[in-house]
Length: 247
Image 1 (spheres, rainbow, N blue to C red):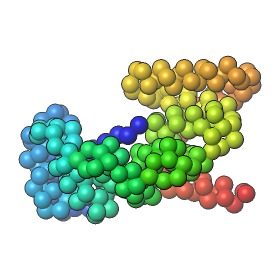
Image 2: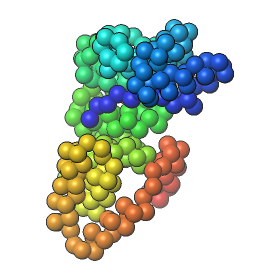
Image 3: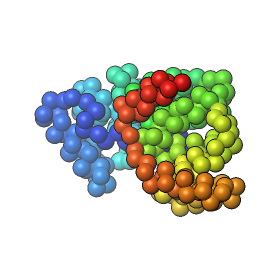
Image 4: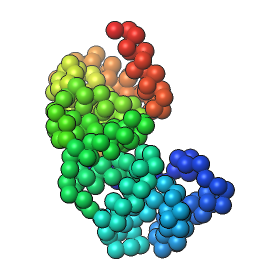
């Protein structure tokens, strides 16, 4: 699934106190659905080069929040923030290229921006990059590479990546078939997904996998799910380094 993120995180950019206060006022206004007030706070900051505000302004144009929906305008603001290295904006720009909204569809360009965000640890971009590798869009199809990016996002708690990783373990695509791991990731996804249909699909997949497992395997998968905790990007990288040493 390709998703837009608002990027309402005050820690993503160091700013002068006054600018930070104005940005936070916009966050509060957006949170209560007062899009006009959010625009009033964010547009001047965006025009001054504040990447967070540029990303959020792009999101509002993409979604038609407080303004007429305008994908080309959204792309303009996403690009300005993305070129400053803002990871959420890089992911969003990649999504616009992947969907062909505001720009001609270009999978290679989508991959470029997803990768830049993914390498900064942006979990949603890591999942989106995994999707590109799984489908062979913008890159040669590579299920092992898809699994690598799904895993990085899933370990950080990205629920779509958890579902996608469950699929790979169930089918044995890009990774040895492992029903315990498939059950684990489907189970975690089912417990977190917000959309009822998506939650039901994850639970159904978990139960279909369980039908192929022994009681001991199911117990092991459930234990792993109980003990699992979301990790930071730094922790995920440390896990990978440790795994590399054991090979």
